[in-house]
Length: 262
Image 1 (cartoon, one colour):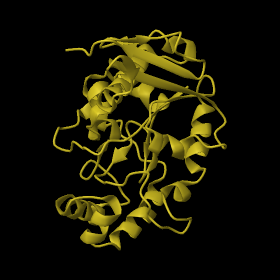
Image 2 (cartoon, rainbow, N blue to C red; image 1 turned 120 degrees about the vertical axis):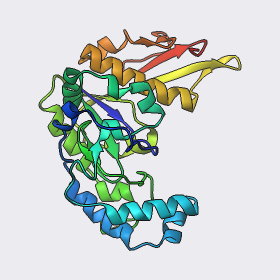
Image 3 (cartoon, rainbow, N blue to C red; image 1 turned 135 degrees about the vertical axis):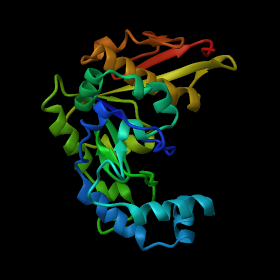
């Protein structure tokens, strides 16, 4: 069983990587494909990057510098294991720095971070700083955007990873933007969606900030409990969320709470 996560825009390259984790760092599967995208991005000026990605001038300039510095060869001097480099709401819930070594080893086999630049990342894959959302309309030899660029490659990579795990099941904890690149007809797996809802204005609804954090909480719980069957997912409880059987279906599990944790 595999768990899919989205990446984060916010990155942390200031906090040191523990030596035990650094020794386990691996290389991304699609580094050569990432290099192709970097080459395309290097052709664009800061103003063009700002327009393409709807960024401020400051962020556009920052990312043009990142594209210029990116190298095909990643090591401890220019990269960081992905699970420790991403620092958005999902990763605040996951709290990867406090995971034990055995937990990281399990996550390396069962957790997949989707990426516009790298396609798929394992938790310990070396990540160099970048900004490239999966939904970016970046023209390339395969088509008009990154969905065309990646095609079925991500789904095929997941199939190959699933072949080494127990059960062909993908638990989708990724956003719609990223899931679209992975959950294609080529994927040979049962897909289970997890939906996190909070009570607001008289009904349950998905509140983006809370839902993102909850995806990280679920990923961490799955890692620590070695969850490898869909049935086990229903036992998840964290920060007030609990499984709602009446609102759920076999392929779509709802986790709800009335009051956000303090």
